[in-house]
Amino acid sequence: MPDYSNFKVALYFTTRCISNFDSVESLRRGFDFFDKHLNCSKVYLETHRDDMDMSREQLEAMKQFFLGKGIAVSGAITTTLMKTTLSKPLRNETGVYGSGGTIFGSQAEPVEEGYKRSCTTLCYTNEEELLKLEDMVRFSASVFDEVIIDDFFFTNCTCPSCIKAKGERSWADFRLQLMTDVSENVVMRAAKAVNPKVNMIIKFPDWYEAYQETGYNPETQAGIFDEIYTGTETRDSNHSAQSLPRYGSYSLMRWLEKLKPGHNAGGWIDSLGSTPHISYFLEQAYLTLFAKGRELTLFCYSWLIDTVQIPALGHELGRLDQVLGAAGNPVGLSAYEPFHARGEDHLYDHLGMAGFALEPAPQFPDSSGLVFISASGAQDPDIMNKLSNHLLNGSDVCITSGFLREMQGKGIEELTSARYTGRKACSNEFVSEGSAFSGSYWSGSSLLLPVIEYMSNAGDCLVALKKENHWAPVLLRNKYGNGTVYVLTVPDDYVELYQYPAEVLTIMRQHLMGDLKIYLECGGKISVFLYDNDTFILESFADGEAKVKVHVSGNGRNLVDVRTGDVLPVFYGRPNESVFEVEVQPLLYRVFKLV
Figure: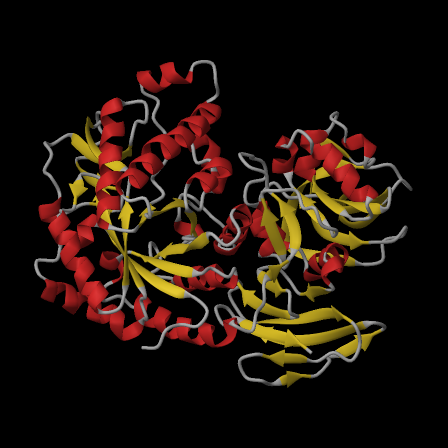
C-alpha cells in the first residue's frame, strides 16, 4: 500500500499486546490484518505499563521485524503501577483493573476475594517510585531513539508525603512545579544520559481543563521535552465519563500546535466505546487530520485487531488523503485559552460545533481580528490591558457572559455597560435586532440563559431571548476606542447552543465571523474548518442531512468541490456577497475551494 501524502499512521502496542506474541510468526499473522487495510509507517512498542515490563529480547525481536518491513520503531512508557486495596463493605470490587481496562486470564495476577488490584499513577514524592521511573526511562532510551510517554504522566496522589511537600500551596501550584521538576530532572536527565540523541515526547491528554490540577504543565513541559503529542480520543460523549465534545479532537491539536509550532508530532485516537457508533471513531481521525496533524496514532493493537473499525478507517484515510493536500494552514477566530486556566470548560468546542471557525491559542493574539474571551481568560492578570489595547488598535473582542461575571468589579465596566445579574430567563422565543425587534424565531424547547443587563443606547442588542414583555440579551454590541465589544450570553448547559434557531445562530456568525469573510447560514451541529488558501471543510455532527448556505465576501465567486471537481453555481448574490447552498450529511465531510 503506498504511503499517505499528507500524514503518517502509527500503531501502538501496549505491554499486554506484546506479551501475547509467542513468536515472530504470531506477530506477522496479527499484523497482516493492519497491513491489509492501512499503511502504518511507525509502531510504538511499550516497555512498561502497570505491573508489566518488557524484556530487551522481546522488544529487539519486534523491532527487527518491523524494521525489516520498512516501518519505523519507537518506544513508549505508561507511568502507572499496580496496587492492591481492600474493597469497601457491600461493594465487592474484587478483580484486577489496569490502565487499559479490566485484566483477565493469565495476565491478571490473582487477588483474594474482597481485594481490588488496580493501576495508579506514581507518587512523585516517593523516592522508590522515582527510582522506578528513572529505570523505565533509562531502559527505554537504551533500546529506542524515540520514546513517547502516554498520558498517565500526572499525579493525583494525596498521601501524607505529598501533603507535607505541598505545604501551604494549592494542589495545582504544587503539582505544576512538581511535574516540571520530575520532567526535567528525572525523565529528561535519565534519557539523555543513556542516549543523547533520543527524541523524548510527552503526550498531553484530551482533558485539558484539568491539566493544572494533576500536574500537566504545557507551559514548561513543552520546552523540556523534545516534542509534544496530542490526545484526540474524544470518543462518544454520550457514553463517556469525561463527556468531551467531539470538536475537541480538532481544537486541542490547534491549541498545542500554537504551544510548540512544528513540534506537535501528532494526534492519538482509540476505539473505546465506538463499536455502536463507528462514526465517532472515524471522526476522531478526520478532526485530528483536519487540524493538520502530522501523524495519527492508533491505540492499540489488541483493541483494534480483527475489528470493523480498521477496514473502515483504512478506506476513509485513503479518501481523506486525496483531498487534504488542497487545504492550506488552518485559520479561524482567535480563541484565547490561557495556561492553567479554568472557566466555561470546552465552551469553544461547543461553539465550534455550532458553526464558528475557531483557532484556539494559549497566548493572547498579537494580530488584528476578533478575539474570543471566555471565563478562563479572566485568570490572566493582565487581561484588561490586553483587551483595551486590542480594541484601541481597531480590532474587536467577544466576551462571554462567564467572563463578564468573573471580571465584574475588576475593570470590565470600562469596556461595556453590560452587567451580569445572577438572574435567569427561560423561553423558546428569540427576537432579532432593531429598536423594534424585527423577527421572532423559535427553538424546539425552552432554554435557560443568564440575564445580562445593559444601559439603553449605550450599545445594541442584536439578539435576545423573549418571554412575554421581558427579554434577555443573547448578543450585545458596543463601540470602544477603534474597535467593537460583543457580549455573548452563554447557556448554563452549553449543548443548548445547538438548539438555538438557525436564524439566531446565523445572526451571531454574521457579526462575529466578519473578519474571516465567510459565515454559515444553518442550525447547530455543523462545523466549518477554514484554511488560508480559500479552502474550507464542512463537517456535520447532526443526525441527518442538512442544507447549508455558505456566505462569502465578493461577487462573481465560484465554489469547487475538491473531491469531484464540480463547480457549484452561486445560489444568490447580494452587493459584495456570494451565497452558495450545499448539502452535508453526517460523517461525509465535504472539501471546497473558492475561486
